[in-house]
Amino acid sequence: MSNGSVEGKKISITMPPGWEPVYRDFGSHLGLLYHCAVIIDKECKGNIIEIGGGNWSTPMLRELVSIRQRWLVTIEDNLEWYCKLCKCEYPFHKVVLTKELNTIEELEVEYGRPFALGFVDAGCMADRVPWFHHLAPRVDILVAHDINAQSFGGDSSVISAIKSFKYCCVDKSSPMWTIALSNRFDIYKSFTQVEGVW
Ligand SMILES: C[S@@+](CC[C@H](N)C(=O)[O-])C[C@H]1O[C@@H](n2cnc3c(N)ncnc32)[C@H](O)[C@@H]1O
Image (tube, rainbow, N blue to C red; front, side, top):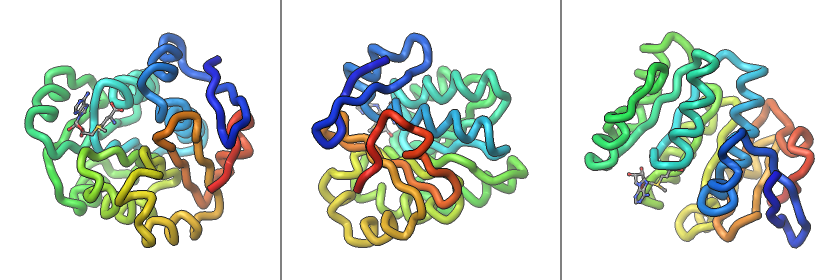
């Protein structure tokens, strides 16, 4: 268990084996993301789409999908990072270099199923808003990192979208908040150790 604080309260987050130090030191978005991936794993058939890959969420999600034979697709818009991530492409992991939102529909057709979990962590803050809106109606759970950051948390269309979801859970255990939204799963209720507030 790793400790953090949400709204001033102490919380504990269960992480997959080996990921605890990462969560504590760098990957503040990983606890809630992992929890949502586990819900999806139990309840849905769809794949996982990640907007913005890197050293933390990508390997963690890759580990999860590789044991479950579910696809992880990482969308990258940075050539250097695309090449890095491609080098360690695993079975059940595809990396796509694009900025085009409609790539999502093409990938749904290619894999013959929708994405169950969407994770928005694109490099450019301004790019996150369109991805957020594009994925919101398409996935069972939408997770977004740095939701409080300028031009993301401050965007009124994002705030209205957040409020339109039935279920919302925010992990404020680091200054860069992570949010999980769903119309299907009460993430807060199942994520008993984290407060769900916006
Ligand atoms: C916020 S990072 C994504 C981090 C990723 N979701 C993770 O948890 O590892 C956004 C973008 O910055 C680039 N990037 C990834 N890891 C990086 C790093 N360690 N330093 C600088 N840029 C990075 C990639 O192009 C990525 O799409």
